[in-house]
Amino acid sequence: MTYCLALRLHEGLVFLADTRTNAGVDNISTYRKLHVLRPAPDRVFVLESAGNLATTQEVLDRIGADLQAVRQDPSDGRETLASVTHLFEAALYVGRLGREVSQRHLAALSAVGADGTATFILGGQIAGSAADILLIYPEGNYIRASDDRPFLQIGESKYGKFMLEFAVAADVDLATATKIALGSMMSTAQANLSVGPPYDLGVYRGDSLTVDEFRITPDSALLRRLQGVWEKHLTMAVADLPTIQDLEEHGEAYPTDEAGGDPALPR
Image 1 (cartoon, rainbow, N blue to C red):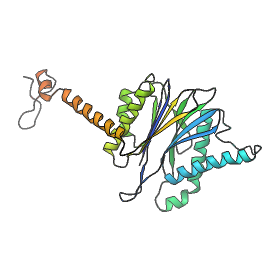
Image 2 (cartoon, rainbow, N blue to C red):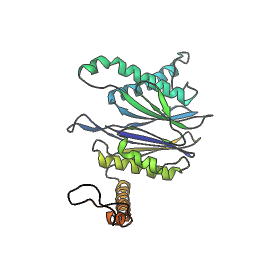
Image 3 (tube, rainbow, N blue to C red):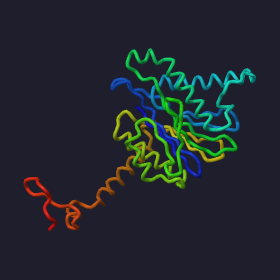
């Protein structure tokens, strides 16, 4: 399992991915799932992946092979991340590769009960267009984030979703968005052992065509500090919540009778 997320903000984009993969409790490995691609001087892409690791790696290999073929022979004419003119065209290109790869191996994988599909988040910017993020489904189609919901998730998304929905707005600055993303990741890792560090973080400031990349390792002092502050404030928040006695005094909670029947009338 994995967890990747992306945030689209007025200032730019934030990407965060864990690196843990597993094929059972005794076969856990670390693989990068956040990839920065710079196929031409006027564009930069970030590709995050979840799902079948072999499919993801073959898609990345094919992206590289297509770029290399056109560099060697400019008359080749094939579509690449360097030739698309819009981000949605890049998403359709990646989606087509993902579908072709999974279909090629479908019979063999189905024979052993395996799923060869992969899901991607593609973000970035082509000069002259706005920065954006898109979620690419295994079927090859895509959706994009909106101002009302300026984030996308793939993989083990349910545990960290509440943090994004609670705190993210399209006008949040990049520094705040990074904190929110890390909080979402820590919530997920705390609830699911198949998600864990190292974490790869990418921060893109709009129109810069440059992605700042960071890796947060398991022994990182920053990660320990983040976890400590996170747990401290969660504990403080719980302490501030009203007790059941407080609710009872205001008529918002009623005691049941001793037999466990209908609620008693408020006192």
